[in-house]
Each structure stands twice: as structure tokens, then as C-alpha cells.
Image (cartoon, rainbow, N blue to C red; front, side, top):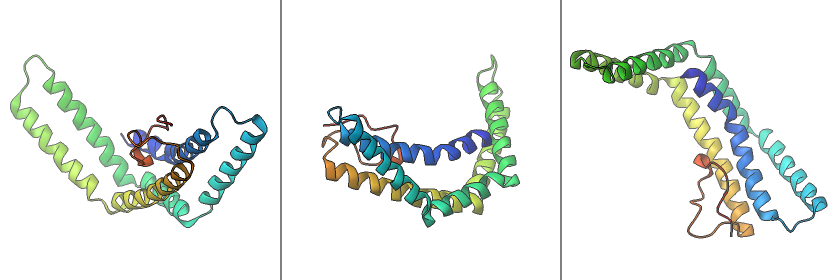
Length: 168
């Protein structure tokens, strides 16, 4: 699980920048000639670089690295995955042992609680949320200014978006 979370965390900046790029590209539309697109793409990259030079991004990267290098968190996430696999295996067996399921479930809850009360994880999540909020606000400003989204489609929450698809 930690590897997956690490990979997910590594891709957060790319996803966030992709969302900005998607909004800008949606604004461009198919009618824009290539030369104009190049100008807009250059400006989008300049904005991305400006964001990356800011304190919110730097704090996010610092906390992400701290979280990913925390040996206790690595072990907890690894143990959580092991216990989760054990639980799935026991529950899908021909004759599930309810006592064993209860024991594994209790272990999972304890590990989950320890993971989610870990100070490093809490700080990382707060920093990630703050950075994601900044990027969401930027996306909202751009999309609102250029009238990209229909009123019924986008919830304007880029933090959990898989890409811009609902264009006017």
C-alpha cells in the first residue's frame, strides 16, 4: 500500500498541473490555430513553473518526502495491506472462521487508527489539502473567467477530478 500511496503522491503534482492544462486547453477549443495554442501552452507552463516556485508547492513536496521516508509509516502501511489480504482471504474461504475474521478486523482497525493519528501523516494530509485547494482555486478562476463548464456538469472541485470533460 505504501508504494501505491507513494506513487499516488508522486503523481499529485502532475494531476494538478494536468487539470490546469485541461482547463486552459478547453478554453482554447478546436478553432484556435497552432501558433495561438503554442502561446497558451507556453503561458500554462509559465504558470505551472510559477506555482512550483511558491511556498505551498515547496511545503507540499517537503511533507510528501517526509511522509514517504517515514519508516514507521512504511511499516504500518505494509502491515495494513498484509492484514487486509488476510481478511479478504479468510472471508472468501469455503468455511470462514468468524473468530479469525474478528481478530484480523480488530488488527486492521488498530493499524488504521495508528496510521491516521500519525503526526507525519496528519501534517502531510493538511499540506496536500492546502496545496490542492490552491490549485482548485486557480482552476475555478480560469474556468469561471472563460465560461468553460456547463452549470450542471462540473462541481468545480479539481482535487478529485479525473480531467475536464464537461465543456460548454
